[in-house]
Image (cartoon, rainbow, N blue to C red; front, top):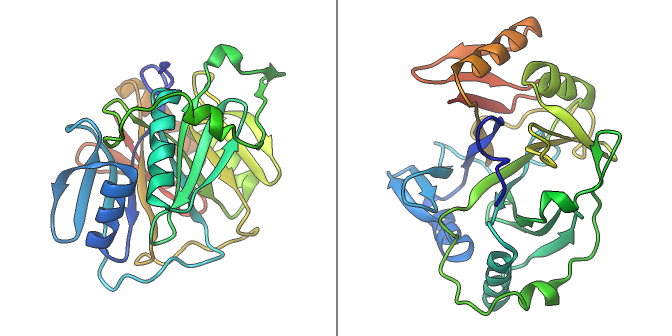
Length: 281
């Protein structure tokens, strides 16, 4: 795996989602996806792949309601596997379980798509080597083509044993209400660079990655935020290389009049559509 999710880049570290039933969701995320439990209470479970780093947290809010349609929020979070062989093992596991799955070749990556029992979107993917990515005028070529499933399955016949320890949160893809405002927030505020476009969508990154964050208006222009107790995204983290880099971004956010609040060891902001972000080091 290359170094797009390490210093000096800014990248997504952890995602926290809301679910209707913690126990039901936890069974899915352990037996179908392959996470391990790091911490657990009656209403919350922190999940990991290496026994120490939180990647995904599940929360069951009081008076939780099902995921609302036509709202801004999570489209999917994306779990990045280290190798194509790892994707092979995961795909075979999914086929053996019979769990519904979609697939796509994006040129830069090979991806599998599924929803958790509450409708939260998940991508599980592997990157092609960055030397194989094609760039034109600062934009990376991406598309949605048919996946070579047979080729992936031929990569490995190893037994599935959960997600590899060095799995990371590869990116997050969000529904937003206004693409122009969202682009301004993520570029001029958070300091990301636009690296690709798709109809009604934009992809941004740092360090020349194909995307750490994607934003789209596929739920409709002006889509309202979901209720606080609705299934969906609660918050996600952006990991900064150092305090100076984070302080610079905080200044940029303040210049945009974006909300910013200091907590114990992180700062909280939200994009113009209400997607909450924790800025951590």
